[in-house]
Length: 290
Image (cartoon, rainbow, N blue to C red; front, side, top):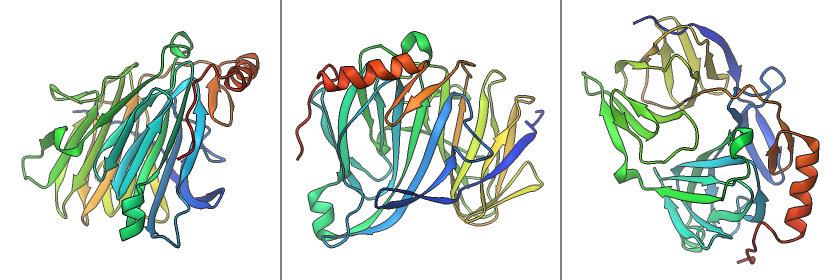
């Protein structure tokens, strides 16, 4: 297998989002986006309790993209204007298609806040192409135990197929575009080579640990946690130097103009203004505060 060469290694520095401090590998000064992925936030680990609960996001709108949450630790409650209400637990994934508009709220459950615990997750913004930005909104919640998992020959690498396909094994999430999302757990000494579709732009984000990519590049947490690959091969190799966890993403780029403002991602500024008006007019639904 010809391995994809590495285009660049990006930092994952801390930024402030209101009262929350989190890592933001996309976007940065060097990386505007990795089409079709336009934002990646790594929040936590936070110690949540009744005296400290900054991650409680009340009702807010979205349009034109898919906000996705990979919950690593803890427990969150999701509510939305479509009537969904679900408790998302560690290892679960919630995949929202905002389409023409949805209002949702998420934060640690009251029970979790009361007993206290660690909260950590990934928030990903996956763009939608122009032809699908105004499709009906939808919500999918997939539980950890329902995902298909591929194991390496040495049994030290486990690849959870969230969305897309790997080696004939498919994810639980129904996607609107050609995209792969895998959560990868690597034990110390574990090795595996993962294939990548030629049409996809691929990246790997390190949540914890220390791994070697393509036999010569180290990822070290707190410094360089994002690897963006060129579209010039068929996969990449991974070796665990310590127990590690990574998120792999790949998607077919749209190569379309992006116009964004706050919670809206469209193609033109006119469409952004229309989104603002439609939200004010109640066309994205209604969700009361808890």
